[in-house]
Picture (cartoon, rainbow, N blue to C red):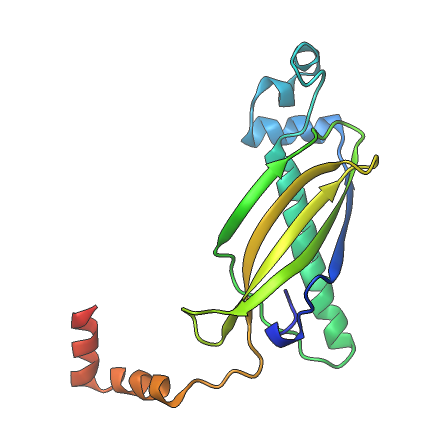
Length: 185
């Protein structure tokens, strides 16, 4: 999230945009990354339990991730245009769950949305907070095609390192003491 941790509002929805999948791109993605017959061959897929060509779940995820990154950059630009300093996003420590509910077929338009469902200060990385996010993807019929529970880091704007941590950090820079710290780890 390109907002400071302190500015993140729980349960605020961020529409990420939509994408219409077509057969050529489904086959192109599958050829490169997920070459299973139901992603590659419409005729063969017709006789499968999917009843036709379907996009790889990873294709659906990749499009959604791109939409999310594009939305983060747009949010950063919006904040700068308002004269505000955007926050700092960090990496994701993981995905807690991911489900694919309905196959994505050629011609389907999938709309993505991100909602921050919770947040807390990090216990292990001073100055950062954890954001708990729900990413959903819904087709043009309102059917949920994909949902993921993601975790991401966001920097705290108003963080001041406690004195004991500043002292420990300073001690690691003293040659003899710094060597002791390195030897102990």
